[in-house]
Length: 114
Length: 112
Image 1: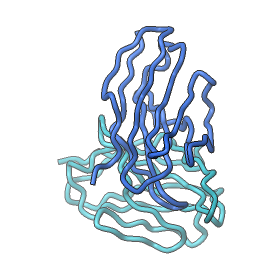
Image 2: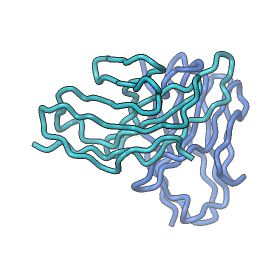
Image 3: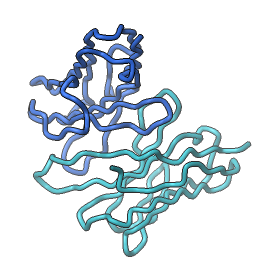
Image 4: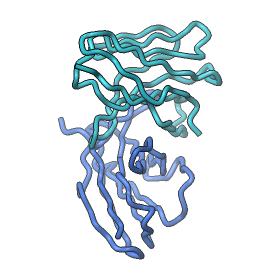
């Protein structure tokens, strides 16, 4: 089963910041938080990941709470092309251990409104 | 640098038939995972291959089998196809413990 819970859907106005929440209350100390998105008819696309600290890249920012039980993906200036299903996933990252499997939940369907 | 490539892009089969789907990982990646995605659902993990061995398996019957070749490419085989096997089959590759998965655009399988 997926270890994360996300809202089923969200709307955001074009040009505004989209804030997508994710709960992962049972996360372990060695589990990373990953975000992917899937645009219709394409494979999921990696966005960002983090362990404890907040992370930022050219696509988005990831804010992880201090207790690591939840996180928020921030798309700073949403465009119509950001309309997609966004998946939050936790994954173990242990050196020398490839025996992890990444489990997707149902994700959040983000609608960017013109 | 080519990303993950999957073939074919679309496939139509009849119940009871067998199908083979193929995946070439992103250059430099050595681990391949397969997912099944039904319409409106998130991807469901089938299995993962590393060093030509199945390392992890999801809740799928033995009708689903796979193989990884020395060049890291992979095949997914499904025997005795059922109507419920109709889905988008996604291949993802990665390298190392915290490498993000890189997905192909999938093979759309329709079973009639």
